[in-house]
Image (cartoon, rainbow, N blue to C red):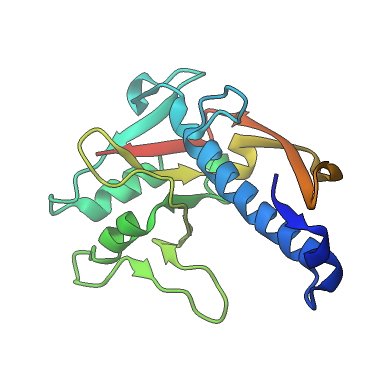
Length: 204
């Protein structure tokens, strides 16, 4: 509920209403990004990593399958191939990697058996890729560490459902806290995994 004085709204050269709306949308986006990864489902979406994570060989519906990861091993690149092939084939064509920037930095240093980096940097406006699959950086993903699902892969459009009801709504209130005008802003968003075959993680 950001606030601005009536005098500021009337006298400012800039459009304060528009600026506040952009700031609020940024705040909502950060909260949504966090909730889609680690939200507990209570008054917020349920995040991908809040579901039980089990070894892919014992995967059942309602749980997220995982493959083992250990980048101290010489076969770290092969581990990423295992992750790519963990989802069913129909979910690989639109698959993508999701990780935070620190994990991305670690992956960028990995090389294949011929000494070539497996990371292909972005060019001409295209997204960076790992072994041909695009990469999305989300800061709320955990860092690489013991027992941490630091990398996810899959078709997130088919695997994770986001419901956004009517977008952001603003109620302008010039009466409750004069001389301030309050901008009571709300947004109703839900989310959760809808297909547990489409998203897999690498558990370090």
